[in-house]
Image (cartoon, rainbow, N blue to C red; front, side, top):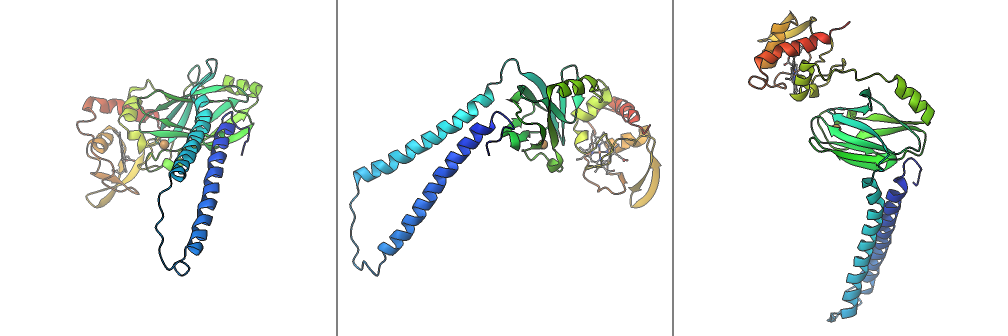
Length: 307
Ligand SMILES: [Cu+2]
């Protein structure tokens, strides 16, 4: 409670504690009253029922007090929320790109990192971009949770106030590997940050590669990784030119991945099923991917060959 991890911790924790306190107060009050009334107005003690007339002042009071209380709760929440939407103009800007199921951070000059490294005590504005579905930029320690919506330019901002590693999670269920969609936010002294940024390589993944653009925009990367990880389908890394075991019409045999095999895999994915994977998961892309684009995809896959 009330850590200094970000400038929003205080406002959010204050609203939380006040609402929790009010709720606890009423939980205890109402439970006690219920028990008292059960005993006091027990049928055995009050054999003959008494008619109670309505009471104007009582009704007014039990309307007015809760109304003032909820307005107060709204005010405290609003007070904590408003600064979250008022990013300072001079804040450093970093783009956070969410895609199934990975976060990538882009700094000025096209530099890219998988860890969000930031200097302490400096305001940072995070532009939130989604490449596919709705994700959620959720940093519990900073009390920040903001939707990352495709086609919408959302943002969040904060001033980190404590050195160390903090967890970034995805708070919107975004598919099979949603729970693996996490990253580290590392807060370091400013000199250390500047040194780190200076040697950070420029974007590794070539977005100008046409094949990459196609597999990304058609959603292939949701099931096929480019870094060797097995997700829903086999990884694309080192795939081209490798020899793999597949099952065709119930018989197991080996194939060497070439242009033809890739084309068949895209247009008729259930013909050759890669061992270790289930049929029917990948749908056919006939009509969605043009035949002339297959060559570009092949070029991209060739660039992922094991060196
Ligand atoms: Cu997600």
